[in-house]
Length: 202
Ligand SMILES: Cc1cc2nc3c(=O)[nH]c(=O)nc-3n(C[C@H](O)[C@H](O)[C@H](O)COP(=O)(O)O)c2cc1C
Image 1 (cartoon, rainbow, N blue to C red):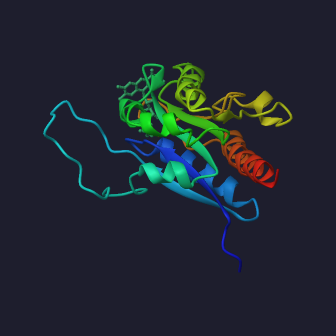
Image 2: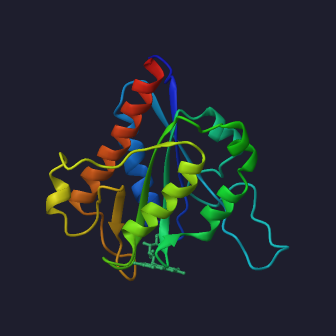
Image 3: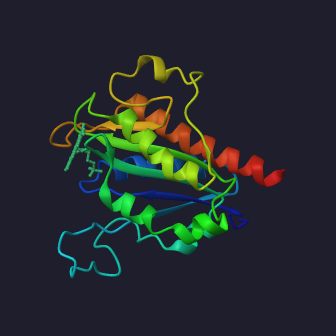
């Protein structure tokens, strides 16, 4: 079997696991495209106690992202739980440490998409998705959403938007991923990988 020749970074933060489930579906979509490999990475939590440090390897889930992952990827899927209608602080903290990659254009011209999970249905899925796009636009990335040719966008009553994938996890995080969300999230990962491949061929 040939080694994958395109690595797509799936970078997420997840405190209780809902956003992580979406990340795994995005990865499934990416790996449905021939020659594309999903690299799942996360970011450490931030603490109000300045001395607190996380262990080098997380107890569970993906390894922590390294700045070289930004250089090595051909595209990026970025996910965060919704926190007051915005991306979570650990993810924002990570992006605040990427000035050098911004200056050197590490991500410039690479495709990207975004995904989120919320406690309530109208609690800010779309604002969070838009908030995650902002640093990616500053980095020169090419943002992808979901097209309405995906029929699930018209029928979903849980998550899934033209701005990116989303999951309504419920107040206690107990909602399973709906069928519409599952299909749309995989489709977004596939779209990202197909776009990265087309850009690489040009
Ligand atoms: C500080 C904080 C703020 C939150 N703000 C929102 C919010 O604005 N809207 C919403 O629907 N859910 C909100 N939630 C709920 C999370 O978005 C939701 O539980 C999400 O599914 C968690 O994802 P995770 O399982 O990947 O950690 C908030 C949770 C926390 C802890």
